[in-house]
Length: 326
Ligand code: TRP
Image (cartoon, rainbow, N blue to C red; front, side, top):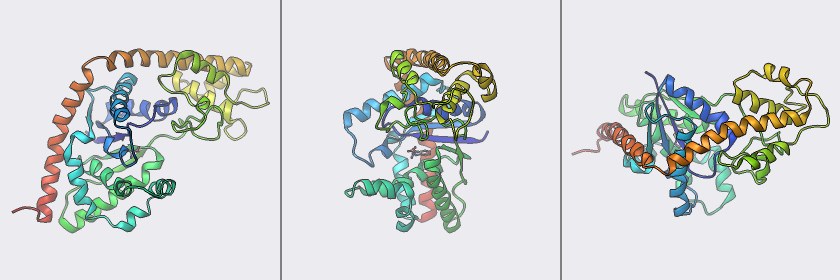
């Protein structure tokens, strides 16, 4: 079976956009591939984090993914910082990566501009990501478009290492979250629904109360036209609502257009609110069951026991190829 891997940073809250755009796809992948999901807590400390918040976020992120339907029997689930081989592999890869390559990464350029006092970890972040990927000889890496460049760098590093020291790594391929399932901000439907958005009215978080969810959806920006149809360019707000409805009910855009073609905007919004609240209330119930149980520890223990060995073998192989032995 082919392998897929993804890493999740335990920062911020998960939104309806993440759920529809990425998590639902990962739920599909778990039946198609041997699947690895880890919490990239070591990546999150490339910018300062509050220690108490960080450890809380790690558990809550994991509980939320499980509540959404990520199945611990079908995925190897682990915590990056519990596997010391990722950082070990990363160091060797750093010594095979050029400063110029790292300083040209778009995300580094953006983030380092925001705070002139950035750490060297922010620069080497993509090498740790390459280590996460190359340690497991995966076929696919599930990422959003913003991370595609980092997967390409991982390929470059792998190719260089293989050429120099002999075949060591499998070439990973980025697997992008599908177009068309991108959920937009409710207040400004021309931009993506993002957990870091300033105006929280436009963002639905998975753990929002039902009344808040309804309020946010009923207040969504639409247009002065009165027709319900899918037209992203001229009707971004309505199209976004149609998209949310279609994604959660499994209907096509055409079918949703048909259902609402003679209805008012208010009715569409109210129906969208119903389906969102229904789906999220199931997830929320499961979340609170999981977070208050011992299940998480057992899952992370199983995950680390399985993955540590694989990454250890890869690290030993790399050391041997480079002459790091007696
Ligand atoms: N950098 C990724 C992000 O911010 C998270 C991540 C870390 C990752 N390591 C990875 C994703 C390896 C895929 C594969 O979203």
